[in-house]
Image (cartoon, rainbow, N blue to C red):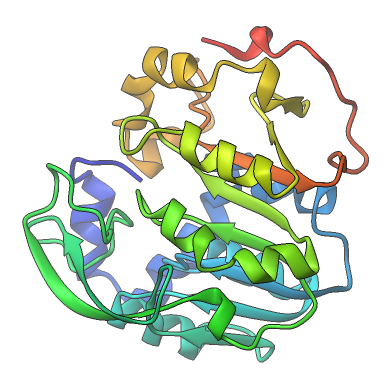
Length: 272
């Protein structure tokens, strides 16, 4: 999501929430094409999939079609209620933020934004102006079993979320999809922590997965930072020549590779 309020973000509070959610789910695979490649890392029949930072539910709804169970963790109250009302029957919504220990914390929001822009965070940034108290849960405390996939999009508190899931990651060895943006937090701590747990990263800068070790993620993000300022609508329109802004990494354990994908060792073709 973007730091500045876009036209779509300004209009969203005035439209029926279910319409906004349906529109977001429809266009999101163009914004985050990894969502359209779920089969590469979340095969059908996955036991439990976890969506940390559910927002309007683009990942939740797709995961519900490939997993026996989905647990979505969303701290913004009205978004959690919307997900509860609209998600498929195999989805459990937890109204809370994920962290490394249970308790309460302040969820930071931009001025005039109730959470619709998807940039709320437990880590305060310059875009944030106010905070609301929220419950915090650790994934390890949710009683999850047979976890095959975890997606984490929390705008800065990724290390805490992963620390709170260490037992789960060590036990079930799920695929992880983590949003990492160097303009918000350094990337290295997350990469190093997951490497210690036996995970290696992959990115999808074009149509081919490449190892994170061969793709200069932070340099790419610095060069394509102007793209990140564009709103969701502008970034999914089917015209115009714009570079891809890669801000999410797929982490797979124990030498696994994205299934069904041709693997290359050179990621420089995708830097723009």
